[in-house]
Image 1 (cartoon, helix red, strand yellow):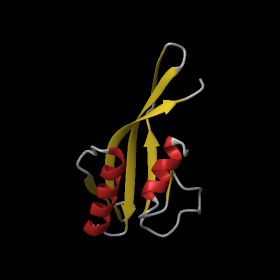
Image 2 (cartoon, one colour):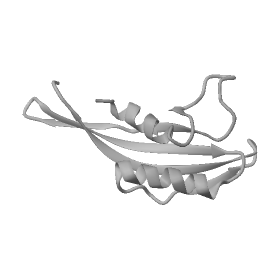
Image 3 (cartoon, helix red, strand yellow):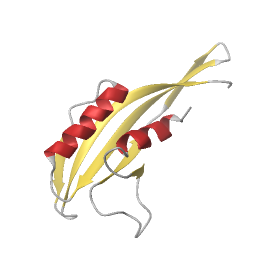
Amino acid sequence: MPSAKEQLVSTVAQHVPCVHMCWPVGGAPDLPWAVYSDEPTGKGADDGNWTVTHRWSVELYEKYPDTALETALFDTLRGVYGYVEPPVTTWIDSEGCACTLYRFSGIERIDNV
């Protein structure tokens, strides 16, 4: 079974390449692409029932806003994770590109802790 991070990357990669936080210097593909971050919180009980709540952020970067791509990624994320906050798109003037932010959470069960 894939890890929560592998599942997220696989989900986003159905639409665009995706990595954690940033691409290596000189290694970013042509736009569009995405990066993700996570704010995990662990909980447990009875020395064996552990979960991690992931608070994911996915940033989609595009040369120009593409409503069809943004909607397709939103729909795919909702299909996997359920509720996804309404995405917010901003123009980054200094980079000459658009960034659409998706935020959502998921719970991962940790076995054999």
